[in-house]
Length: 526
Image (cartoon, rainbow, N blue to C red; front, side, top):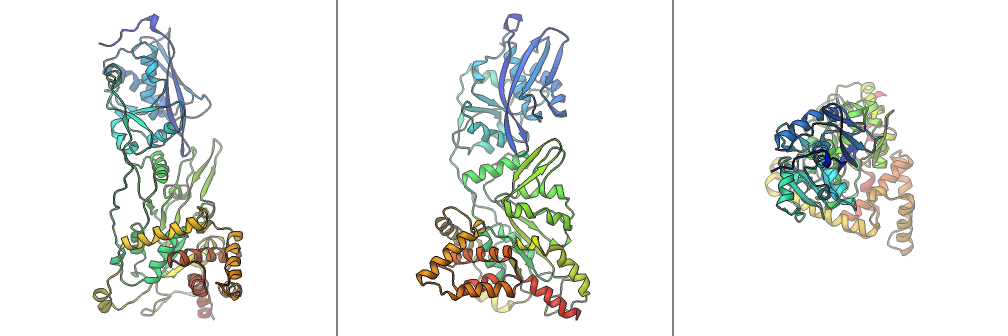
């Protein structure tokens, strides 16, 4: 039997909810009061159009859940008042605050609980964009001890450590929880299932140099560009890379899932493997890096802790590629708009793939290229310069191999073997660099290790001359050769060596192919 309200029960009801702002969730205090005046609901506190539409859903949900709707002028305030708010995630908290204000639910029960979820007209509760990010926020707030949210979101938030959850299917479940003193569900252990591998590395015959490049990239988080004729397996290599990336840690998993939750892409589950995003070359700048009138994350943020695969890289607009320069190096992207400034995480590995020319056969030994040198040069002008400097490896995919001899007599290493090697190499990298990735080594870090190795005698002093010689030969800028030296550390970790030697340096600098291709073009033009 529901409590019958009367004027003596009227008070300000308060609940705690959350809203999405940029890529973060922020707490919102929802206040409700029953005032004398016209019958209805007014929501204030800068709700968006979804929040303004919620008035009738809240009223219908309350009545269809067996509660009585207060026959007053019901005002709902969303605080802080100067922060724009998305309304869907706030609906259950708003309805609960109204029920508290009318005396039908006790205020004390909701003092230390965050309430999340949208409502249907029949009172059922549903997930909404940002639930995972909001649940992580609740875990971090000292005054919040548990979360009330839709049952459909339970699996998604179950692995958050220390979080206690009250799963509900409808608004009426709130009274049941209070009356029957139902205890919250505690988190389950974090367990990462094996990733379903679409393309295994063992399915790719040959391409040893490209396979090694993907492994080095996964170890040190270096950016890679694959260049090769059509049919040489560039897209297949990209699909295989998803299977060799180590699973996310709990902290990384929560971070990635929160971002995808804010974009409405988490599918009510915890993301436990690095995401791989593959936007089409017709994607706009905003779709790729994020933005909009109310800034939202783009593909570079959705690939955070994973891979951003740009197939047909040369088909992307030059302006679009240039927008990637900041996130490729800074691991974040800042979007400035008149209404707000938002900074999104963008710690991804860029994996690009392109044909060497329009027909694809510039580097082919089997087919003749019929493209004009000037038209090919325009392709490379788009990616050369600051963008290309940020890419550590330009690897050419092999066009031919001995099919009959390779397939049967030389079985390839599978994705599990490559992943184990990458995990071991990352452990060595983190131990040596005090938790820093090879991609983020500074010039000071690099010179420290080179000087230490040369002074101890394990590396000859001639290695410094070799670095200068290879940098000049490949026409590398300061950033370019620094990224190549960072790559040499990842090769060293993969090979389980304790120092860099001349062979490692030669291999690292061998991944610089674009300048050789443009030199080839100049020869053709002459």
